[in-house]
Length: 44
Image 1 (cartoon, rainbow, N blue to C red):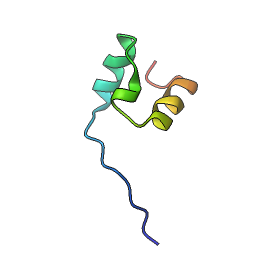
Image 2 (image 1 turned 90 degrees about the vertical axis):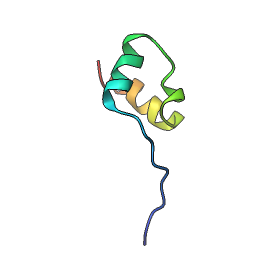
Image 3 (image 1 turned 120 degrees about the vertical axis):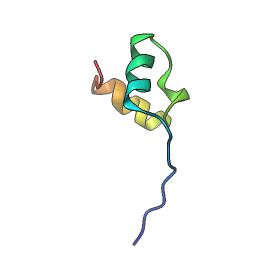
């Protein structure tokens, strides 16, 4: 079984920068990923 996924062209540096600037991560990654990052306080 092969799972299909959407490739996201974003770096961890971009995510860290967005968090530092209090931007909405949903513009960079799918909402479910943004929620996971926020809930688990990743990149902080």
